[in-house]
Amino acid sequence: MAEGISVICGDAVDEMKKLPDKSINLVVTDPPYNLGKNYGATNDRMNFDDYMTFSRSWLNEAKRVLTDDGSIYIFMGMRFISYLYIILEQELGMFFNSWITWHYTQGSGKTRGYSPRHDDILFFTKDRDNFTFNLDAVRVPQKYYRSRNNMKGANPGNVWEFSHIHYCNSSRMNHPTQKPEALFLRMILASSNEGDTVLDPFCGSGTSLRVCQQSARNAIGIDINPDYTAMTLERLAGEFHGFDSSDARINRVPAGKNHTNQIPIWREENS
Ligand SMILES: C[S@@+](CC[C@H](N)C(=O)[O-])C[C@H]1O[C@@H](n2cnc3c(N)ncnc32)[C@H](O)[C@@H]1O
Image (cartoon, rainbow, N blue to C red; front, side, top):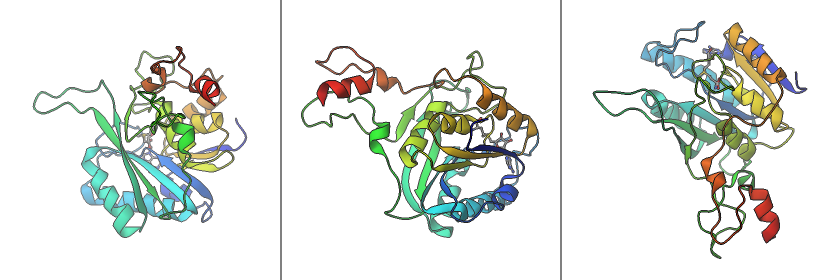
């Protein structure tokens, strides 16, 4: 296993309680949405009050372990996201930065209502002004290259389009809610620096840890299901052949430029 990456099998709150105060630079996590998914070891359909108690407990620990300039990103479905927002802002006194929509083009179908095509991600910081945000690390090619546009590329915005990792994809693990690595990559590159420590208390198949391993971050991943922590260890030990997903905008051909889909080459030409 990569140096600086720990995988812990246990309950998120119990394990977070063992971490020192202010020891984590970034929490980036995809907790159970309480929509009845089968994660084997847990009940993903708690009553409302129990889910709020569970959410409060782990969010409270997350805030405690974050450094003063730390940030948190939380994936969440529509049913509970507004309640988590209130806990973060009103109860924990954290600072709202962005509400990111992850838009996907395929998913389950509804016949009496509109088929869901997005999950959302809350980005809060512990301090209002003092936090890491490496915009240059996450820029995407501009749609048009005009003098008034930033030649380093565009801010990716708060609507992110990535496909799910389909079951026929060779990178697909045997986990019901595996997320695309590119989603985690963007958050980790923007909101942490090399050598920082990232915590994912609900790491599932290990997507966040794989990204940390490949982007020179230390990481701690926790999951309650031993099958998933074993899966994560196996994933981390596998050879790396590139991330399993990318933003389609990376293929934009800047108007008036020679064809290239690699932003660093374009930057060299224009520096
Ligand atoms: C939405 S999934 C995470 C998926 C992950 N992002 C990925 O890409 O594979 C949530 C995970 O939380 C785990 N989990 C549920 N309750 C937990 C608890 N109390 N403590 C730790 N892990 C828990 C589940 O086993 C599940 O793997």
